[in-house]
Image 1 (tube, helix red, strand yellow):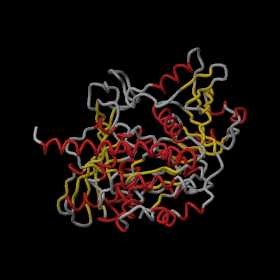
Image 2 (tube, rainbow, N blue to C red):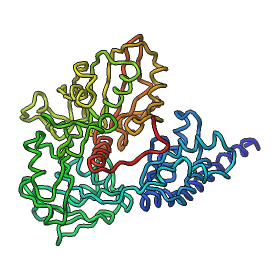
Image 3 (cartoon, rainbow, N blue to C red):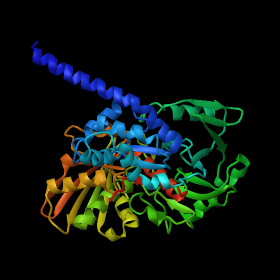
Image 4 (tube, rainbow, N blue to C red):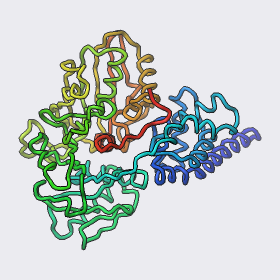
Length: 485
């Protein structure tokens, strides 16, 4: 082995160890900022909260491919170390964006404190969010358990939403243990990151210090939440049993309940909200709101971005969707066409209302989109293929560059992610927090037509959007710094 080879090996090894040391030094600060102040640190839209040392190093490296100017750990760490000294109110801070701004005009660490004081002045002067708000999950299936994971992950003095209870049917011997086991172990999303203790005597689960009461009831009318010390609560109905105002009003009528969020498309006059697109439509007077569907959340932000710049004349959305509990594991009777055939063995052509539902969040696309769905034998992560006719011509490179920039610096950065990987497949995106991830390699554009391929974790990515809606409904509004366009 030559001396030059040894030298190169040492250089790379030393750099890796330096990055590890820097990240290990800021990990406690990231935790304190989040737990004590309610400040979530992002890196070009990717959260660093509860991330591992390796995760943070990888996030820095991946950002090099998409950010206009690369940012390394040595540049972000000094800014993070100074943040803990500031009296910040709850907010989101994109340290990647701030580091880009700082190092573009500075070549040393001398003025970091002054720079942060100026950039974050509004957060420093704000009193922040103090009042805690109660949350109840009505149902504890796939979405209910993922919402629990996210809310527990976020819990702390700086986060005002408190998961106080879950409501389920049953109550037979061993039920609590089974509920705890399903939360603890998930075949798709892996082991729960933390501790779960079952309190049989008081019918509760203690999850990372969060005391969550388990209420057994066969219908909303059976529950009086005030008996459990719960008041003015947001009830998140993830059963899908009731989707109209009449059915969901059963929750509102319960003592201790104030508002309802449905984790399925709402019917009638219920507002269907895709956070990032039309969340401002939620008013204080709204007692019932729908978070729409996973597919609607996956495609609407991207459709909005495309329509804003290029104009959409018409289009067709084909979703390639993982099977769900609504289908049969083996052939059996089902009231829906084709859904009675084995989900684990077949691709099943079915209908979807997602394309039509887009117009509820984005009225300018009313009547412009059609849609269908193919259920496939995978347990999670789906794809939407958007075949669009545009008002203007566009090339693949131009369209991808625009969408990549939207995913980094726009107000839709939390909703749209972007990848240029030539090897990415569905399992790589299990646990993705963005509701939609654009596959830039697959983009097709010619004249005024384009085809976009949008991946989405139809369970976890959607659950993250639901939590955003919960926050909006309960007045928990975190600003992002620097401000996004």
